[in-house]
Each structure stands twice: as structure tokens, then as C-alpha cells.
Image (tube, rainbow, N blue to C red; front, side, top):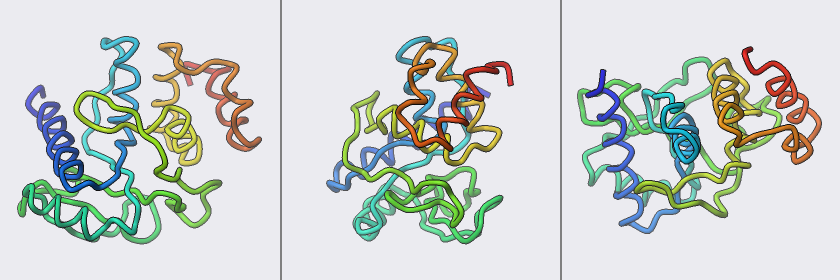
Length: 189
């Protein structure tokens, strides 16, 4: 189990180094972003994740692709599971599975056509442990927009360590605020 966790961590760091070296703006999002935020408060509360999600600007795709392929990743466009359409991924080698990949999330675009909001623009990031991290408010907005089971669990993780409290819903539009209030009022789900 520990080697799988370490593989994900190495994949994230390798992708981050490649993008940074090429001057490509990016932010780690998804489960790794939640883990990074939670670890700032309580390392024992960190939940592991199986893949790496990176927020990129679509205009940077060719530069990002060259950088990631130069680091040993293999670009594929795959049909998204549980979503409509396709997704750009960078497999961790030619024999890797999609779950052994860096998944690209496009900045400023809706992940699915009926999403409440688009993903955040890639205007700012925060330095984390060897990578650029999406700001907490942007991460919350993404988790509240997707609101799948794992997103709700991630929101509970952030709340359980005190990163999110009853003052946060006021920062979001009503539909997202209602979702966050639901999580905060029922932290056990």
C-alpha cells in the first residue's frame, strides 16, 4: 500500500517539476490538493488519492504536453468515466492505466456541460511541498460544483480540521452555499 501512495506522490512531483521547468502555469487540484491543505493542519487526517489532477489553461496545452512527455508521460485523450465527453490525461508510461495518470482539468471551463460553475481561472496559486496548489476557496468551489461522493468526503475532511466553518457559505452563490451548509450541518454524512 505504501508504495502505491509513494508512486502517486512521485508522479505529482515529476509532473510539477516538468511544468515548472517549462514555465507552464498550473495548480494541483482534486484529492492531492485536499491532502495538501489538510496536512497543513493535521497530517493524521490526510486521505490518500489514486491519481493526480492538474488545472491548466487550454492555451498552454502544447507546451505542457511537450514538458510532460519529456518527463516520461504519455498523452492520451480518453472517454471520461461518469462524465460526458473526453479527458486529456498523461499516463505514467506507455503501459500505465488511466488511474496511473495526470488528469488535466481545464481552467475557466465547465467540467461537464451542466456544471453550476466553470473551474476557476488559473490566476493565482500557493506554494506547497514541491508544487503549486490551488487556493483553498477555489478548491472548495470546485468540490462544491462537482459534489460527487468523493467531493463531499473531501469537503468533510477540510471541515474536520477547521479549514472550513460556518462563515464560508457566504463566500459562494446560493446553490454552492446550500451544498456547503449541508456538509457543515451533517459532518458525518
